[in-house]
Length: 378
Image (cartoon, rainbow, N blue to C red; front, side, top):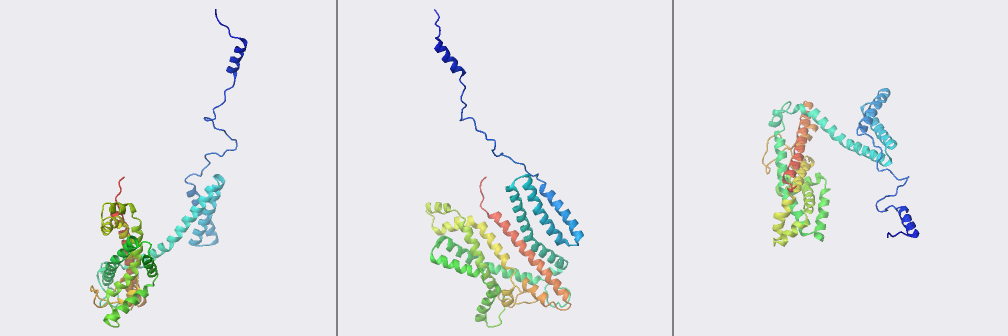
């Protein structure tokens, strides 16, 4: 006989089947009508170029109508671009994006203003000195030359020899001082005193270094002494602080874990410095030394005092006067001779050669930094 459900049980089953299901709060997310969108309109990538073109065209029309020059056109273009692009971004995007575009514009303008003196200097030197550069100018000296002709061979040799001698003097002193500051005297009073005096030497005027070298050699060889090695010592006084600072920063970048691992293997401190610390920081040290050479190679005042000038080739650092490119430029422009245009043209040509040497040293520093940098596995 089949069992029948009671009316109470039937109603309970119906109520359970018809009861609405409560949504799972763990899987559903509440929505708000005023929630911020996850994306907003953006200006196209070519918006900056479009605004730049419109600003340049509008400023050109205004410049022509008012009779302004190229400088006025450039300034007006920058102002229009700096105003139009952020305003367009504010209308289409949001305030944050507009502020970002405004700051980016100011940064690029500051970068362009920083490049203007360099571009002007290079263009002026190239314009006035390029026509003088030839084989005779680079391979002849000024011995027995009065008017046209001659060259800067003796000045190039003197510059390279004196700079090389200053580097030979400065690099060992600078590296050892940096090792003393970082590896042996970190935080003690002696290291702080050395750091203070290095900072003082950084701010010494170059002519004071020349006077010091002249006074030192005058005590040994008598008044009126002029030698290339004296110029090298004067330049080394200017180069040592730069080498110390650059090497100190490079040694500080070497991880302490490398030193501790070497000490854990029983390696003495001096051998750890020679075999671990210095090879790791070698790229930065070479870069700093090369940049220091580029810094001192154009000094004039110390060499005027102690190295002197001559029209002949002299490759002996310990004998007689020695000509350098900065001194040659100074005398060629201030005492050009007859006719004056020949001497001034030679000065511009020597300046171009000196700039080329400095640029070559900077490129060499970058190349050596890449060659000697620690190789990391990828």
